[in-house]
Image (cartoon, rainbow, N blue to C red; front, side, top):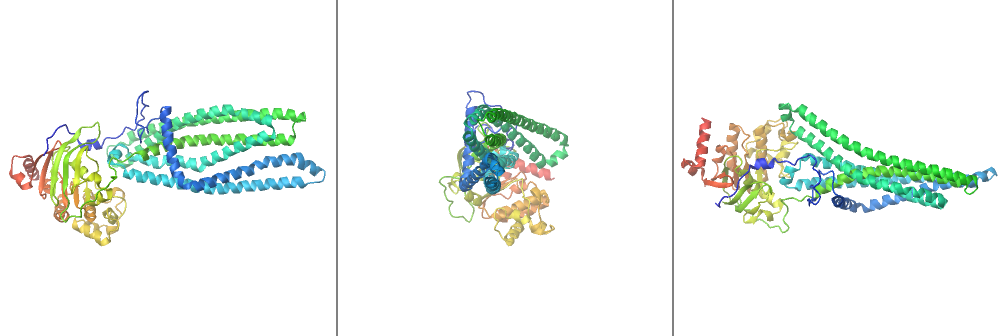
Length: 638
């Protein structure tokens, strides 16, 4: 064994560390923060340069999900253009009817008036028809984009390493999948229609105002200057505000998910009042953030209405004066007024779009940050193949391996050299926090070593594809997680194509068949959420059957028998002889009855192997650490 240097921290403690969900202030001026991934997620105030980087990342994501649907986007744009073009003809037809059609009708010729009325009906029907088609296209486009985003988040979250998930709570991932997706849904289903329709309406109507009467048209367009300034202010302010609302709802979801997942502990320790107080505080923060957002939209909408009404009053005053003076026809003034009302109505829609866009933009920033995260343990660019499957398992080698859970955490394994021959069963024993589980996690490549290599049959684990590694190495932990569904589905987790006969054979091999057969629906019995219908020992047996059916060449058991009672443990130990046969195995256990079936025992202390040998040889030594542990265990049985 190599020399040992450095201190050791408890791996379980390191794994339980979580990212503080309280908002962090923006980095001080001159600092160089890392804006990659979720680093800026909790910041409600960012510098202008950082905001531009986050927005660029969001736009890249949006373009990537819209690119496969360019056809639908173009079709939707054409439909909006047609709808607005048809709608613009309405006031012109009214002007023609007032200035020409009505006077002609008074002289007995109703032709022009009839054409104007018929044309107006046609434009109304045409506008409604184009709106119907647009909503169909936009609805399908929005759902396609949302499905793609949900699938990306789900696929990517599954691929991210354990190190990420230990910091980034499941409640936050749920927030990305729910509240943030809902914000983008509002943008796609309502906002896109608002911006396209309003933008084209403003452009078309502005042109018509200039055509009808250039002086009045230029007067109206001059009122756009204050509106542009207010719009710029609103956009910047609302973006900051909606970053806060997105973070606030994420904290609520995190609190709710953690409370429900730990509801037994909550009720056992009468935590309900305290949790309710925390939820009340978080809800208050969310309410205040939304109140600020609505305050901004109220100011913006009020400004739009004031400018619009003032413009209308000025136009009516000047237009009436010109009509009286004979410089403007009444029909033209009527059409101008109708256009002016339509001109400012879309600005309300633009205000709502700006509000929706700011909310969706904040959500896109968080989703794009999550998708930008890369797994610490990633697929190799140049994968290597394992040698042909051996009949006696596979050889495991640790070559000058050191490991720490994070850059600012103590070293867990200072320097480890270890060779486990193919087919050998090795037991790791030692105090809690000695580094046993860390060794197991490195073998399963849940983490990569900080230095050195871990190899399987001479192939560095970092060069194996994930599929090859998972076929070769299976880990059974103390926390036997079962998914809602049947017993058979849980046993077949690693081999979904397994037949019912193979599933039953695996259950019989580990002694699980008798209790499964006694369940109400046998192997079709629903184990419910987290396997709550089964006892801890029964869940552990299902986990054993799952591993046996997967048929790996390397099996890692991390405290896998800790939940078993004595009779069940003895039955499992008898089954383990067949389960471990012809495969390499690593057993971590505090129960020495499980350790005694190993070919070799390694005593681990502070990340070092301080003692090794067969169980019998170490027990005969009488003065070694394992001998002391064994004697203590025997005394406990008495």
